[in-house]
Image (cartoon, rainbow, N blue to C red; front, side, top):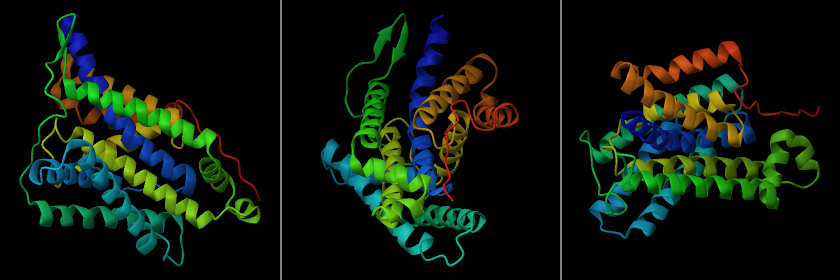
Length: 291
């Protein structure tokens, strides 16, 4: 039981990370019907920016975290203005190919700026691990869970209680109808890109102390975040959270109880299973189209 509890703690920590990445996928898809396959690279930029600002420049923790998120979100806004909005024939396959190209470009840029070596930084706090029934929960894992719960509550409030959040949802339902009632739909799309890439950056900042961030870390994290979003229901806020935690827990149990070779395979096996059994995900997002 102690070993299983330790695997669960590890799975919950990883699941929280996957959930934040999946939130970025779902937020953007819900507003634009676009799947950004460069999202994992924005996670990488967030992690390496956090290392640079906090460990290299000595900026205090909270300002370094906020600065990392703002810089990466600004890069996401620039990506939307230069690479997405300028497309003359914005068919889904064209936009997906653009995001794949952006992923390769950002990975190369990360290698040029930060080099090929992995980096490290200290955890957010130096508290001893929390002992629960003999299993250890690291202080950084507690920080990750607190931040993810705060992000989830903030996003729920944003979409249900603010005019901007409701305008984004209206634009996702029908851009033409939203434009007719005075909602600036292009601004909503731009905001969706900023929030999505900022969410990816937040995931990168909180995992920087427990991983060895490098220029090539984003590819696998992005794919697992996408699998978590599909598992829970692409476009669903709560589906992304559920899919992330479910993927993290099953991955940790598979590694601990079966074989370490299942660590990366678990996500794709779950994705294939959910596509066969329930293509819309566990919590299918309800989409309404106006013509």
